[in-house]
Length: 281
Image (cartoon, rainbow, N blue to C red):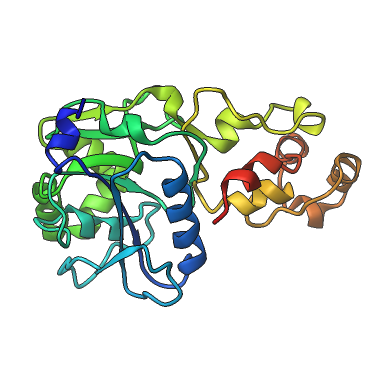
């Protein structure tokens, strides 16, 4: 039986992503497409809005970056505000509900359920686990109907820096201003690697980060790429090391990089093979 969400898009599951500049590029896009293809029941489409189509899998549908018409984007902000390009009245040839995925997440289970929850006109976000006392969504994975977020783009375009200063993150802006109010996917479907998968100190030195049974997608925000988890590196500046070596490096200020000793000890993960099993073409 076709859900109302799928009926609104002609029975096709529409997945989208966006890429600009050189930070990610073809390797990340191709991996994301491969993960979607392995974890979704056809028919589906995978559309990438991008400024560079070089070396992309020919099965990926490519569209130019949607216009935004903002001369000066916000500066000194944590939010990924170029995503506002997706909030316009049109997204290429697509219409109806679309599921947006960030390029640096890892898909570990079926995506089908994301097209069954709610109504076609709903804006549904994954829950943000980093702010448990704030009803905040996460736009690393969210579903919305094409054109539903035009009012957000208009508010942002009118005062980009002011909006960024007020809301800090674009996901807070979407959560607070989604027309009709934001809804959320089940909490355990979309998990945060560092919060939901790694073990707390001192278990992090003995146990490989776990993959919870009900997870569909694992997020790797704030420059913590999946490859770092594969190697056992805690972030962009982390170094892979055996547990004992990491502990001994606590006495080296250069290796500790101004972290307190306890924070340094907490910031350790063992190599995580299951990430590599999923994060591949």
